[in-house]
Each structure stands twice: as structure tokens, then as C-alpha cells.
Length: 328
Ligand code: NAI
Image (cartoon, rainbow, N blue to C red; front, side):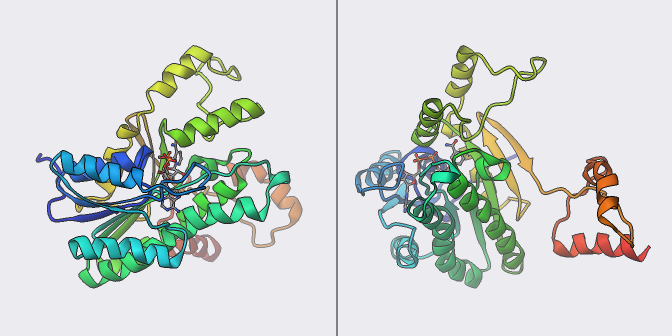
């Protein structure tokens, strides 16, 4: 099999001035893509701006012989989203790949959550992906080709304390991913999502706050097999965290951004070189045409039983199953 390349492709990576986004930009550029390195350069909470990170990653790419343009617009407004895509059009004439990766954190327990903590998180993660994808979509749709990779999180998909704002934003991106996959199929556009786990400043901050608050980290490592209920030792936890190199997430993102990507509307969880798929499953369930509340109580185990679950590709397939069950 030949190596996978991106010659002639133009990629926009948001939040690429550090952490995961930098690794995505470096890998795409090293395989021949011309890359727009977008980043506002603010704090993990999204405060302040600094042109340094976007400039420095673009320079790093050029020093390695690649092509890159820095962009420091915020993804968090419609104008910002347009400006990011405009940078790609002005520098390289098109956009083939968009990785919506920019992100911030403003954690608080739900009883302390406020609009001031909610809105910026929704603006950067959820609306930000919307605002950058929207103008990129026009270009991709017209050209009949595009790859979009959104960034979700186990913090939302599986639930983590203190992140109701972030979890809601990240899970909203799943809805966006699936709907855009449905709409994009007619135009050669594939849209997928990754839930990364990597040692970046964001994870470090998450873990520090967690330690301070005695709460779960953004993604809590599994309990050790055979020692149910017992947390990992500090040493094993440290060794695990050291393996969370963001560079080991980039290959999965780059594959989903590649022409050969065989799927659309899917979610992959990626960390430390491990890649697997998250999906929405539907249990076989229980059917009674005269369903009562007591029936639900009495058959709850059957309703929840994961044996023989299915993974509907779209609402039509789900409704089709219901149709067959109900129609006999
Ligand atoms: P990071 O903080 O290093 O990277 C996020 C980047 O986004 C920063 O460079 C920041 O300046 C930039 N950014 C923030 N607001 C922006 C805006 N309005 N416009 C443009 N750029 C902006 O953190 P990390 O870990 O690399 O995060 C990347 C993505 O991965 C985020 O979406 C995050 O939520 C997600 N993620 C990370 C996990 C991890 O384990 N590190 C776990 C799950 C999700």
C-alpha cells in the first residue's frame, strides 16, 4: 500500500497554535497539504489574544519545507468564521479540509454555572464549528469535494462533572456532524468527529482543577481490570498520562481528512495511539401495542438489554425498524 498524501489539498485547522491542532497542522503539512494555521492565542479560558502561536506554528511548517499561512481570527463569530476561510481562499484559492479543533474551558459545578460561563464555551466549540464550516461548505459544495473533522469529547458523550457547558457544546457537535454528513453526501463532502485524549494544556488544566476539587478529570481512566472499584496508583496514572502524546491523535484525524476516508457521520475516540469507534446503539427493546407504565417497569431490563443491539445509520433506518416491529 502506498503512503497517504495531501498534495494539492488546502486544509484549515482551527486552534492550531498549540496542543492537538498544532500536531494536526504539522502532519497534514508534512504530507503535502497547504495549511491555514488558525489560532487566537488566548488562555485556556479564552481570554486575551496573541499572534505568536499561529505565527510560530506556520513558521515551523515552512522551516520544515511545507506551506502554511497564519490566521488569528476568532472562530466564535460569523465574521470570524468567514475571515478564517477567506485567509485560505486568499492564500491558496480554495479549502478542501477543515478541522474544527479550537476550544476553551470554563468549568464549574452546575449549581455555579452562569451565562458568562456557558456562552463563550458554546460560541467557540459549537457555534465556532458552525461559523467556520458554513463558508467552507459553500466552497466544498461547489467543488463537489470536502472533508470536515469536528472535535467532540467524552466529557459530553459520556458525561463528566463540572463541564455542563463544555459537554453540551461538544455533544452538540455530534448533531452537527451527523446532519452535515447527511447533507454532504450528495456533494462529496464527508464529515466525521473525533473525541481526543491528549496531554495538552487543556488536559493539564482539567486535571489540576480536578485535583483541587477532588472531582473526576475530563476523561477518567478506566479502573484497572481485576481491581474493580480501585483507582489507579499515582505512578501508573502518571505513566499513563505521559503516553498521551497529542502527535498520536493526529494520524486518525488526518485519515478522516483524507480523500480515502471511507466513512461519514461517525465518531472516533483517539488517544496514545489507540483508535476506536463510538456509536449510537439501539437495543432490541420491548413492544406492546397496549403499553402501560407498569409494562415499562416490568420489562425495564429487557428494554435496556444490550444483546442484539443495532446501530441505525440514520433516522429512516431507525423508523424502519419500528415500522417492522409495529407492523409485524
Ligand atoms: P489547547 O488549549 O492546547 O488548544 C486549543 C486551541 O484553541 C488553543 O491554541 C486556543 O488558543 C485555540 N482557541 C481558543 N479559542 C479560539 C477561538 N475563538 N478561535 C480560534 N482559536 C481558538 O487544547 P487541546 O487539548 O489541544 O484542545 C484541542 C481540542 O480538543 C479542543 O476542542 C478540546 O475541547 C478538544 N479535546 C481535548 C481533549 C484532550 O484530552 N486534550 C479531550 C477532549 C477534547
